[in-house]
Image 1 (cartoon, helix red, strand yellow):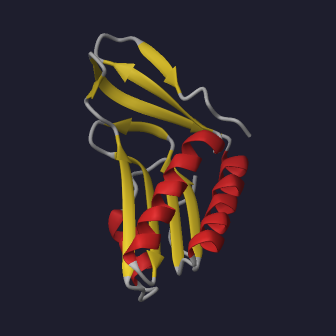
Image 2: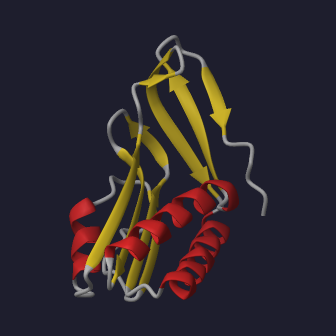
Length: 150
């Protein structure tokens, strides 16, 4: 999978098997010169329920996932009058504390930025064909997220 740069305004979506860059996303969003930027980062947590997580791994149907991410960004842009939207997701192994997903929205005011970012992460989790496998410290594994609907 290719690196995400250069970003292309006003919407940028990307899937990559290397660490996601919060700095690159911030730069892309801040160039919109809006009044509000909201960024959500989803990271690998150490404890899931009563189990210790060693790492996560992700698989994606890349072309379908990118298409759906673009569709979601377009919908968010229409609903909240966004200036820029960035949606980045990682595939492959994601160690504890590293980001699996970054969602960023630049708008003229803070409220719509928060609302659009929340919409995007919530919808991404149910409609984008990306699958997560949890790898636990005891050596067991478990696929998560059986709610993909499209």
